[in-house]
Image 1 (spheres, rainbow, N blue to C red):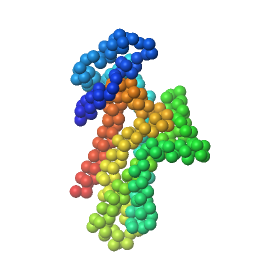
Image 2 (image 1 turned 30 degrees about the vertical axis):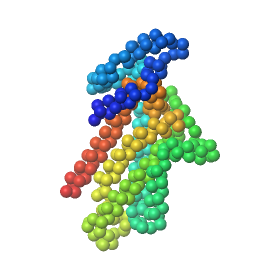
Image 3 (image 1 turned 135 degrees about the vertical axis):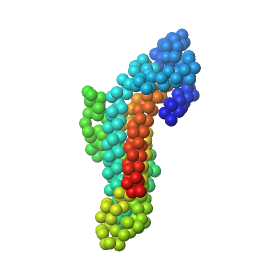
Length: 296
C-alpha cells in the first residue's frame, strides 16, 4: 500500500507543469545551467528509475535528497515533531470533548439538548478548517486581541509559547469534534437497544450510570475507529491550518515542496504522515479486537 501511495506521489508531481530544476533555478541561470541542474537531480532519468532508487533507500531510513541538496530527514527533523505535537493536542481535545458531548446527549435522548448538540455537531463537521481558522483569527485575535495571529518560533524551532498552539489546535478540534460526537452518540444509541443496557435501565440505575458502566464499554470499538479515522483528517487539515497560522510544521514544508516540484521531499512528508496514521489505525484495531474478543 505504501509503495502504491508513493508511486502515486511520484506520478502526480511528474504531471505538474515544470520540474524541480526550473523551480529551484536562480535568477540569471541559463538554459545550460538548468539542464545541468536537471542532470544533477536525475530528472533526465526515467520516472520508474527515480522511484526505484528512492524506495530502495526507504528501509534504511534514507528519504533521499531534496531539490536544494539537503537531506530530507534533516528538513523534517524539526517541523515533523511540531506537527505531531499539534495533532496530539488536537486529538486529545477532540476525544475528550466528543466523549463528553456524546455521553451528555445520550443521557437525554430526544430532548432539546440532544437536538441542539446534534445539529451543532453536524454543522461543525461541515465547516472546513480554513473557514474555522479565519473565524478564530477574527474573534480571538483581531477583535479581542487574546491570542497572537501568527506563530513565532523559538530557538529550538518550536512555537515560542504554548498560547500559540491554541488557535491552530481549535481549528482542527472543532470540525473533528462534530464528527466524533455524532459517532459517539450513534454508538451509544445502538448500545441502548441491547438487552443488558435495557436491563440496567429497568433496574432503575441513573442514566449516567447506565451510560458509563453499561453502554460506553460496548461502544468503545466504534468510538476508537472514529477517532482513528480522525487522525488522517487532523494531519490533512494541519497542512492548511499550519500555513494560515505560520505554524512551524510539515504544512509549510509540504507547500514549499509542491511549489518546487520537490518529489523526494513530498514523498518524505507522505511517508512520515502515513506512518503516524498507520500506527493510530493499528492501535484502534488492537482496541477493537480486544473489546470484541472479550465480549464474545
